[in-house]
Length: 337
Image (cartoon, rainbow, N blue to C red):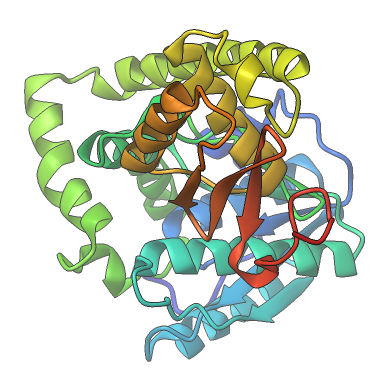
């Protein structure tokens, strides 16, 4: 932990790198900062309070995943009291299901809890403290998993979840710059022991891969960020093409019309349809199998029934339907099968 057991009043400091990142940000007020008590969110909260005095709340998510969770909450309360910031604590159960990564389970629970707390207190925007190093970690993790453009686009500066806008204003700010500023101001922050646990993939990337990148490519944060923006632009174009193709083939997609597209456009349209209409993300193998079945579907008697995510794709009345596991006897349009 950084020093100073007693939090000081909110610093008024022009050299906070988080404050510079907030200058061009336009958010509805009052807003909230997702506040873990760690270095990044502490610097962001200090900057937000200085940028919008009296208009900032803090939301702390108590995951209950480790013994130190209660201490994190206590530190957050102490800081918010010293800085006159309203604090809202959300208790969540972030245990992962079989086959689900602990990181993914915690992230989903965190977004849901942040959104619920924000809506309960009429806060339309939540600021997140992910920074340039986190962005690189996300891209490296996506590359290690063989991700496509959505993964390589990494984290967007703004997203919407559960009816709430989430902003990431620090994606161009180095993590060490935030910590250096906090130490210069003698502001205490918590160090999560999970961040140093090699059992977690992100921790290994942070402590082994990023230092190697720093030695080999000192400008890697800037170049990775530029690549992420290029990937995001390309993904946006693919989304627009998919929407146009689905307007022609229908949603749910008619197989005969779908077969008139190239295989690459079929894949793009089907991936977009599954994701936007059903929240389902097919694996590469599942999508390839589905495309093979569409290519082979030249007769009226051909059947398609392929497992995809938490459901399956079936051919009914000449069109593809997605049926979830909890609605196995109802098709995508709500009719009994």
